[in-house]
Length: 501
Image (cartoon, rainbow, N blue to C red; front, top):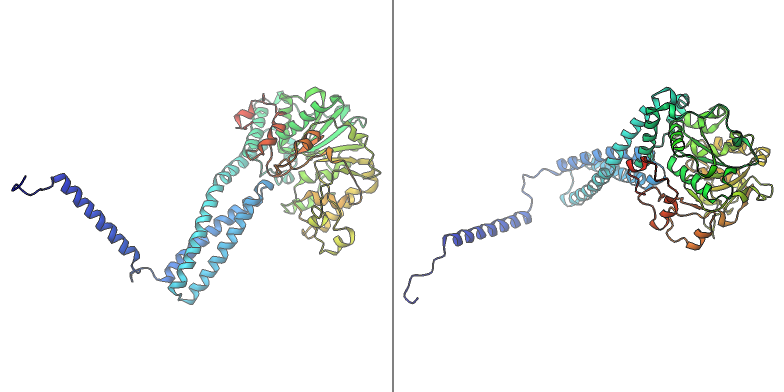
């Protein structure tokens, strides 16, 4: 209106306008302060270096502890162990550099900032890595304590206690939580009702020593995996009652195996003998360099893995045994393996070399004279998983004695990595192995997503070698059903232990 009063904003609008001005002022002030040089009252470079060094040293200790734990794990945690060890070494080196600069008493500002940035980035990564591992680390410790407690309780575990130091060192530290849970549930069931789960009789069934039958050996502490091996072989067999499985485990897991097979008897009339390695008195430090090295503190040698080199001594009445790994599935009748002509050799196995890959040079240290003199670096490596062993030729050729010689030569780990039981076999059966047709044993289902469906379909045995085991969440989905279809899902403990089957 002309000649009226000038416009005056209302009180709420004035308040909002004032707030806006205040926010703009604070933002400008914050920008100016952040872009201004550091005030003279900031901590001197020596104090900042000392603080960063303390952080680096603390995280070095934490990661070293996790690295020590991760080293106990098997193949599934090898990458984690490498990450821990590598980052711990990097932080140690960084801490040493910081200490060197502190000792000089001066350090230029333009050189300090990049060093601070590098240290903080590595410490941030260290915290994330340690946080990811902490849950599994703590849970594993609790599980191991529970396992040790159950192992010590009751007369029904007397055989396991007799194993003493040998069994305590061969605990399955890398077994996933669900498998630990399953073993503990089975042990609890045995402890709750020991009379329902009797030990094996003193006199084994005659089938266990009958050389006319088809005998398998399986060395494992994974009861679920072994149940799948047995079930798949039984279903594939034309005459299941002629197939005999000798399952050998650690003493602390033997009661769990007995509960499983008592509740879920072997299918279709196959025979299963359950044993612990403490049942074989010749497995002692006097007779076996494997046991001797374990008792001397060599944690790289796992007795359960190396038991395969004692097959003729473990089963003296048998003439031929097929060794199966616990991560295989049998798809066809294997009876023909007992009629195969091995051409007078001890071991029948599928070779896995192609081109220049997977040859002896990959597994052995050819800088050692004994290795250069005895082995051809271009010799083709074969695989464990399905192996036919002629125990009579084995005894004749003294293969166990030859294995002992190599184990004693390799006490310092200079000839081969002692965690690799395959290399020990490549040496002990060098020139004494017959190559089998590849259809007997198709490998790679635990790491190779590109195996042809045709090869899998025609395979007598498929092998989930690699880190992506079919009982793990990381299993390759396109293969997992080939394994899970043999799992006895009526076993109630599988649900209780969160198996995602």
